Structure formats: C-alpha cells, structure tokens
Length: 141
Image: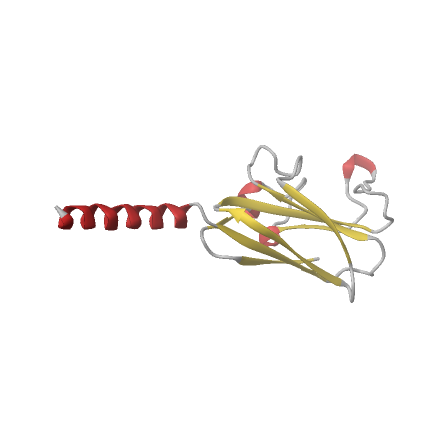
C-alpha cells in the first residue's frame, strides 16, 4: 500500500511540474535603435491577437529616448503569439501624427522589423511566439 501511495504522489508531482511549466510567463525586451533624435518619447505596444494588432495593445508603455535608442521590458508575459508596434512621438502629443491619406509623419516600427507595403505592417509579418523563454526583439528605424 505504501508503494502505491508513493507512486501516486510522484505522479501528481510530475503532473503539477508539467502544468507549472506550461503556465509560466516570460519577459519580452524591446530594443529600438536609430531614432533621428532624442526628442519626445517612444510609444511601444504589445499585441496578443491579429484582431487587436495596431488597434488596442495588450500592454503598452511610453519611454524616454537616450542616445537615439531606447529599451523596455514587458515582464511576466504568458506563453503565446505576440507582435509589437512602436512610434516616435517626437512632438510629445501622445499620438502618431499623420499626413495626407494617413501616411505617418513620425517614425514607426514593428517586431521582426516588419514593413508595410501601401499600408501598415501585417500581423503575419510582425508576429512571434514565446514559450517558456524570455526573448529580445530588436526594432531598427
């Protein structure tokens, strides 16, 4: 009977260990380089679905630009598929300024350095996966 209880306990411990690994979270560090200047701030958003991409971020932040670059870390992000977008809010008005036909006046970028053609970058080009491992996304303007 003691052997049976030991086997059951060990099995439960193994299952809980596997479940804990599946539910773990990771960090996503975003490093952005080649800003034209240090004016204003960088607005950075993390998206967790194609439907919300470039609309409503899962998490977002503003950060200071120093030496024409910046970096931030989104902490404890659950495993999944994500994308990042950012723009240089050069005039500090908390929005991306656009010209005629919605063409951005301020620099912007996406994860995987995805670029848009005749429109904004696509989710398919910007998405990446995290799975129990912290990562760094480099965005070059």
